Image (cartoon, rainbow, N blue to C red; front, side, top):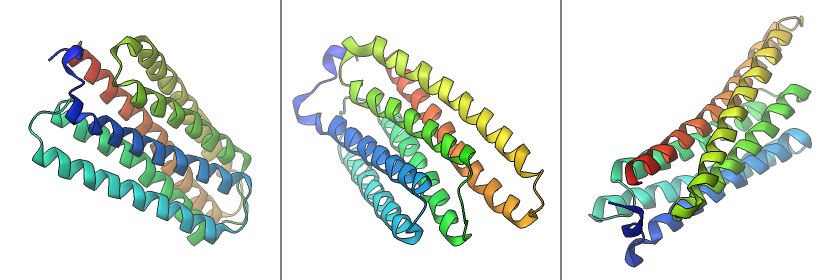
Length: 209
């Protein structure tokens, strides 16, 4: 099926649902950035993040229900399911990181962790743009650029995490090292999931162009 057949009027809502999910993921990332840059009212912000994650889950369930009852959709069923799952993973790992900041009673957020979240925000913005460009074949070059940038940001996220964790082990507080290391790893995985989402988007274009 070519791109010209993609936009079946009665099935446009699949793109709308994907865009809604991508917007919720972006909202969660911005909430996380507010948490780490203004590290106060941690429990309240953690609760807000959990509500955002729950809204994302609701969209995932809705998409799954629609996929199960719709035979013809503008994107292959498996690709639609994979992309939805990758977007959900991003939000899940961010929510898990915010929960650990609260439950582990982290007193202060290291500057490297703020930098990592900033990279994550930039990556999610690229994912958001790529998802919204999916319905328009003429934007295939823009999508390719988004995917390249997501890859670059994923590499940057890895570099920040590796340097930050190495620095942690030079401190004397072993328990704090263990706590912060786990949070760093969750944030790094979230950036990895952005790249996974970009890979699915690239596959969709290869299959349908």
